[in-house]
Structures are given as structure tokens and as C-alpha cells.
Image 1 (cartoon, one colour):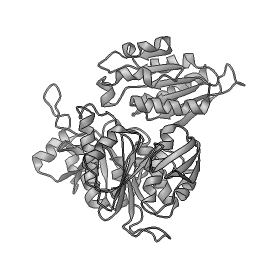
Image 2 (image 1 turned 30 degrees about the horizontal axis):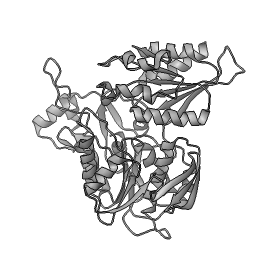
Image 3 (image 1 turned 135 degrees about the vertical axis):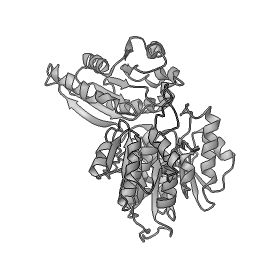
Image 4 (image 1 turned 120 degrees about the vertical axis):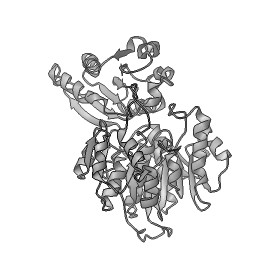
Length: 464
């Protein structure tokens, strides 16, 4: 919604927004764009008299225990018969119409892959518009409209201006329970991976597979579906029907595959080396993300070799293995510093792949994982049994157990003394600081602000 607000502002509209508990980097971006952010959902905002209320999917018709609406503004909008729409519907009607949309879907890696693909197209001179669920470091903003026409480029197919969008399977709004991505009507659709998530709105994996097939149904015959060849769930999606060109990636027999370590690997197309990626990212998940972006970029005329050259200067996304601090402990000023990272990982698979990427980078150095089960799925405890598996490669794990309806200590018991649970952020930070040694890598993972735990740990280490 923050990125959508940025697009509306760039298009010339006056934009305000309301939410609860907005945190960086989006709050900083909105402030820099001059977009007024109102805390809460009070009815007094009707006085703004907007031409359109664009409603995000956090808004609902739910009530408090006392019967009062949790979102009084939407009740007032409905009572007054004022115009409203969803974010995806507004995008479809006012931004995406007439553009070649490249949509990146999947349980994991959407934000990073969308940023990679956008950077590849930018380096190719296509001046893409984009909407990313984070802040790509190469651009410094999460969204822009891009060129209104497709720049003429040798070897590039004709077509409308290009727009890259992160395509989420979460529902659209309280009045539209379809997945958001069915509104985007892409000509190029990336299906990065697919496993069970969003237990608050989906009953099982089959229900999510059905939504992904709804996306496939919107891709034209002249379009391309880029699919992870390692995922049985995606094979089932395509088995339900596909009417477009399909390009696979990841498996040895896929159209696009990799040979080499994730930080330096050859790109193979139909078994032949067509490019070499040398970059600052690690992790097998990022190697797969790169293959997906390369296959999608080829559909708009960017060769794998050109795409690989662009990835060499790709700087990732804020909160994706972002180094927040490097601290020399006062007790050992000449020893290796302690490095603190911030990452968005919150699903067990994302945690495991993120940890694995760091492990490949730091070798035998100690990794201290600090995380909070914050997503709706994790809060429900649906995947608590997978947490020890997701943390296998860490030396110590620290979990914020506050606000959960299940026992985090019990879930992490298979890890024995390697895992600690704290009821508050301050206690959690103190636990981490007490265990930190020179040369440690402290990996903080959450899909929220995490109560500023990174700064709290850093402050304690500097004072130690």
C-alpha cells in the first residue's frame, strides 16, 4: 500500500494514508515523498473528502469484544455510500492498463526476485515501472511509474511499456477475497515456488494451488509462464491447464539451470552455458531467484548474458541480509567484530534458506539467530514443529515468545540448550548480548519492526 501511494503521488494525485504502527523503511519513504500518514482509522478522516478511498487488506469488518468496529473509518465509508476500491483494483485500472506486466509470484523470494528483474530491465534501457514489497537498494524507492512507452532497443520485441510487480497470493480486500495477483493480468508470470502459508485464509496447500492456477488463467497465449522446475506443487498447478509458453528453471533438466556456487555460477540454457553470474549475494535461494529473473527478462528481449551483467551490480533489498551494525566488543577491541543483520525471513523455509546462505558465507563462524513468529501463520502455530528444522545450522537461537497462543519453548525443545525464549524484546536482546562473542554473526529475522531489537542488541554490546 505504501508503494501504491507512491505511484499515485507520482501520477499527480494528492495522497494521504492511514494505518497503525507503520515502521521503517516504508514510513521513511512515505515521509520523504511528502505523503501524510495518519495514525489509526478514525471517522474524522471523512473530512478529507477524497475522490477515492483505496482500501488495503488489513482492513476488515471485525468488532472488538465490546461490539465496536475495529475500523470505524470503513464503517463510515459504507454508511455514507462513498467511493472505495481495493489497492490491486486501483493498480489494474490506473497503472497497469496497456503495459507489459511482469508479475513475480511465490511463497518465498518475491520481493528479491522482483527487484532483480527490475534492475535487469533498467540496465537494459527499458525504464521499467515497478512495485516491490520492499525498498530495492539500487533504486531507493519501492515503486515508480516508469516510462509511458517502451524505449526502442535493438533486439527487443515491440510492445507496451514494461511494469514489474510483486504478485501476492494473499486476499485482496474485505470485499474481494480473491488473491491480489488475479488483478494484474501479466504477460510474463514468474511462479517462484509454492508451499503452504497464510493459514489464516487458506485451509491447505491445494487451496493455494487453485489460486495460482487462477493467475495462470490470466496469462495470454503470447505470454510466458516461468516456473520453478523443482516444485511438485507448481507442476500440479500447470497440470490444471496452461495456455501460454512455459520456461522452467532450477532443475538440471530445466530450460534454465545453474552450475557453480551461488555467488559465482554459470547460467545454462537448454544445457549450454549462456552467461556467468558473479555478484555479492549468496544462498541457493538467490541463485534460483536469479534464474527466474533471467528467464523472465528474456521474454522482453534481454539476453541471459546481459541479464547476468546487470546482476553483478544488483544491491539486493533493504531488510534482506542487511548489515545493521559491526561492533568491536569493548572487552576485546582487537578481535573480530560482531556483525548484526536484519532479514525479513519469517516462514520456516525462508528462515532455513536465509541461515544456509549466511552459513555458506561465514563458514565455521558462530551464527546467533534471533527471530519472532509474527506472521498470522506463525502466530497460529501451524508451522511451529518446523522451527527446529529451520534452525539446524545455527549455533544458538533466540525466540520472542510474547503474544503467541502456543508454547515456543516446547516447540524449540528439540534444540536443547541451543535455544532460548524470551517474553519481551528487552529480555531477548539481553539474552543475545550475554552470549555474543567476537566474530559472531547475529541474524535478526522478522516480517515486522521487531521492536527495534537490532539497535537494542547493538547498544548492549557497545556498553559491554
